[in-house]
Image (cartoon, rainbow, N blue to C red; front, side):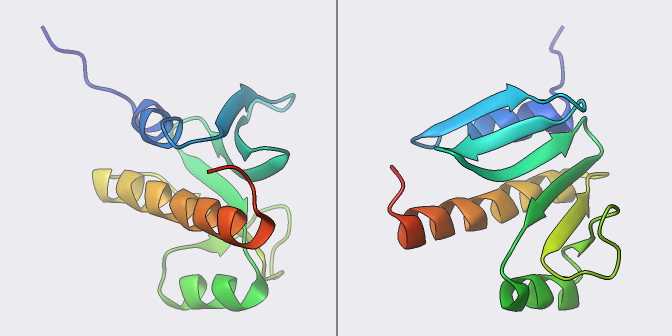
Length: 112
């Protein structure tokens, strides 16, 4: 019998394979995904990813319907939430984390 991976397990398996990525459980139940000292985002179980982007990138992603406002910062561009409900959501969460990963490597010279 084959066991299906949860959304967070699928995301973690993909993202943790990128060079320099570290993961850890946080104090508020979140699962942090980091490159060096920079958090790329964090998961809350299998239901949502929280992350941040520069405002112009955030607006583009928001306009495309890929992210929404972070619940702690409603109406404040930059902080984002991405619901995870379908397999397509899992793939987009990985893509959003990759966007932050690539930006961190490119702009901050963090190890890749």
